Image 1 (cartoon, one colour):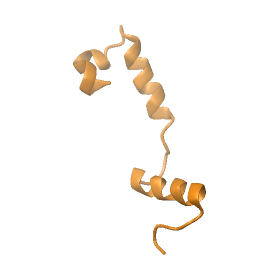
Image 2 (image 1 turned 180 degrees about the horizontal axis):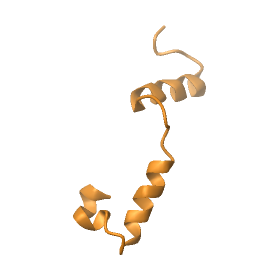
Image 3 (image 1 turned 120 degrees about the horizontal axis):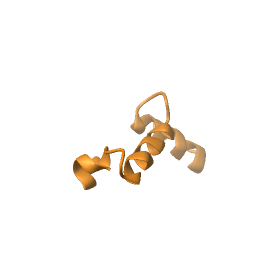
Length: 51
């Protein structure tokens, strides 16, 4: 939101700011995004990236 809309991406007057805050609440609370990609990939494909 910030990269596309600049400061307007955080301004309360624009709905994109609320969308940004809502999207942040939907992220995984613990771990890095790379680890989450490995977990989802293992669950979807049934193979481990570390094997």
